[in-house]
Image 1 (cartoon, rainbow, N blue to C red):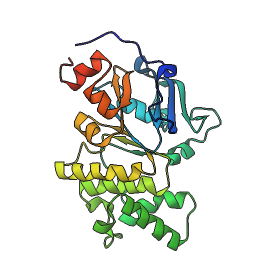
Image 2 (tube, rainbow, N blue to C red):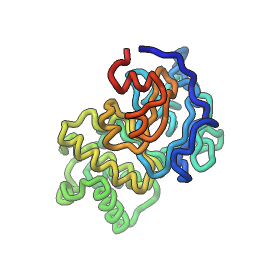
Image 3 (tube, helix red, strand yellow):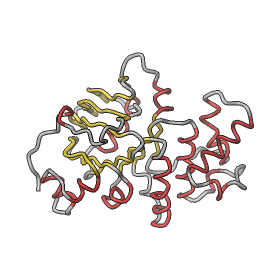
Length: 270
């Protein structure tokens, strides 16, 4: 059932972190692919060192929103953007911003694992080498720390010289997470990262999520409300490119403010 609603004004958005920091802030974020509008004035703050889930039906703008946050949409033809994305008070779309520095600060994990056709070690070391790290001892320590953070070290410590492409899908996805964590991002974006995994690997992935969230801000697009309920501290519900509701996950999923949110989470949405 569709309902008429207005997108929330960011000024009316409550401080859901009870005094905690906001890692990333969207201000009237709108996006077009040619004539098609994918996002319509989306505004909310992402709490620091927490997991925030983005939920909503297909074509609601979840992945488009995520791609805006480290400027991946810059590379798409006929893509137009309005609004602001702010990290640490700075607008990521300001003219003097260096895009590759944004992508170091804001890491991205995609729906399907995308390891490089290199060894396990070199996959994790890749970004470190680009950032100027050359000493083998430093590289070894950083690679090990990243693999441990991704809960993969015990499985691959004796296989660091093997091709990453021989790992299982679940291992490849954790390797990609380790590669992202190795360069020390402030924020980690994840676009349905468990959708290609079997149930056992999905469970291991969800257990893994909480380790990075102790140090990094995680923004997770998920196609299942169950995953949001199990893993996310906060949840944003998008519909047709608009933010319908944002809040504490337990509250939003059990006592939503908006009728459209209730219809979606109870399966009455059509």
